[in-house]
Length: 560
Ligand code: AMP
Image 1: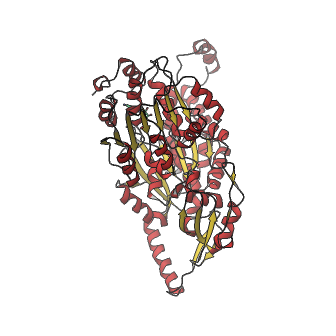
Image 2: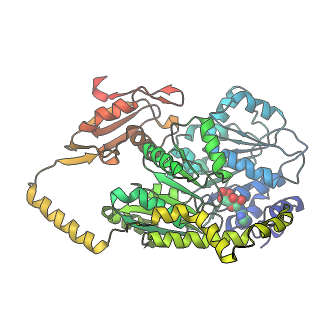
Image 3: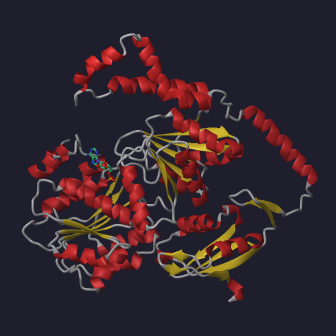
């Protein structure tokens, strides 16, 4: 099937050609003909990476009138990153449609600038819900003439507590002719919204909903806890062309590892909750332009990142939730490309890994951590390949040839090559000269684990409930399974849902998930059960800090 065959105008087909899209993806093939009618509602069950932006973006551009200089289409999506991503794709699709304008409006940026942008006569508005409501209330945007509403990543928007805002938007678009909803999952609330606001929507499902992408190879390396960093470094060195994201549980880890690797000469920076929007944009910009080869991030900070061509996602530690794992791994293997999601695990985490494997339903491959020799050989081949591929077609290289020939007249070709290799390799050869084996051999490990478990049983009376915890800096303290309840003035209105909230408080307090009991989230506030012995550390690290310009208040619930 071709884009032309789907009924798209020549100018849009020209744009897909210019982008190098050879064939429509499955969702485009199914959705575009339906959407071009302009009157049919659609529910598309598809994850990012399936090409859904083009599936709705191209039909929108065909249906909208360039002559009419007011908003005719509204795309609502959960995050600022996604908002910008959609706009930049639509910009490319509309390359051959002069007079067509699209604008992004999202929170956390100057509203004045966005109001000015809106006044320029745009036809398509891509917005996050909160900022859109703000603009409606200020009468800076008029939804009267909106014909098409697209809800992208609808499940994510509802998870983040935007349900009322979405309904408000749907209720305030009186001329709406079609509503297109895209979602990775189909929870009951989405069904309810679609029943209430959509007319017999056509349902399209692409791939298996909520399972891992088959283009991703899942790999893991088993090492001991104190070799985690060295293993990471070795894996990076073993993949010279890597363009990847490393995930850590805590921002402290993200920052420390980024600093260490930078000192050792790697192009890496960290993305975490403490950065200002400006710093965050800078890091993301450099990563996108590939000035950075690696990005290290916590899950919260990496929310909504969509970067093309990621070759590797690295789990510096396994996340606790399968959902978080799938989310992380989904950053690679997009749009039909293949990708690798690899995890560095401790021998005790094998059980957890197998559990994730069962749910994701794809086999995970255990790989040997490369030896120092392997790394050097790999780097050597990479260097030779680079040498052969070097572009010498530009510049005045020819004019230097006589000088070079004279300079190297007495040295053989072999010698020159050796010297070039030495320059490139000294670093690797030196650091890998006596490199140790970082693998933990499983048979030995299983025996030891059993032995240790036996010893523990002998020491501890069966009734003992005592547990010992470690925080992320390795400090140990005893817990007794006795929780205290903490109040915090953050809730779903702040853009959190449970998993991200949990990660946020753990990141802030440098504590591990084991210290938490139940979490009860409301719109404005939440209540967290935390082990009594970890409560002080949590309050001390969170109470009084700022979140999006607001002071966080955290205290013991019954002390108020
Ligand atoms: P999305 O699911 O919209 O986030 O799209 C994921 C990526 O796939 C984007 O970078 C698109 O540029 C790319 N893409 C979309 N449609 C096609 C296509 N038909 N062929 C190749 N790449 C595509």
